[in-house]
Image (cartoon, rainbow, N blue to C red; front, top):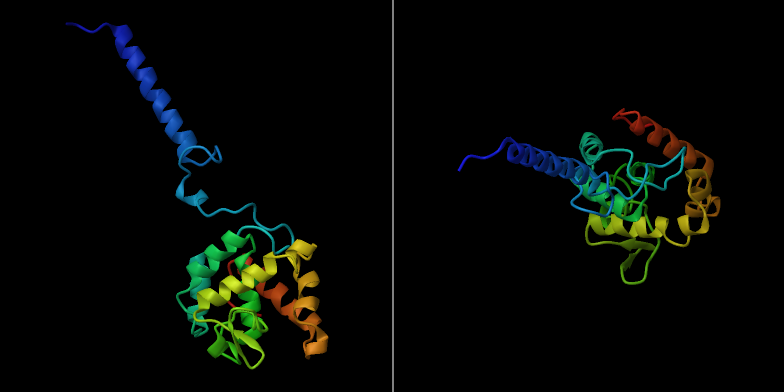
Length: 201
């Protein structure tokens, strides 16, 4: 039986309709419906505004790996973990990486070499306490504890969302720290890395 030209038009319209749906849902333009594209699978929110640490990562996992490898970090190869946990906790991984640099040169100096603690966290319930610092079984465990702390009620939950607000509480002068120098290092590092420069301040 011969098909009419109207059948061909209907089929063509239906195909266009299906392609349109695929484009809309596949691109992730419609949040929470359909299957998001790969680019949207790990987005926790918009990137941080100004010098806020709250928001999706402003540096890529590959860039983190590049920095850890370039500076001989024992945590080399864990860039995807640092990135993904930043997404999960909605804290910019550039900030976490800058803390990691300032605290231990990416795990190469001090107690972090054995505690796997990105931020040299003080003792935490449920973890081994080693010389006054929390010790973790892996870098990933240490990253998770850091992000939980920063995103929780003590910092971001209390409205402390910038290095200028976080660091005087995180690394107080009473513990022998220089908050102003610490803030300078973190702000400088984040600025360099957000501009794509694979170097440290």
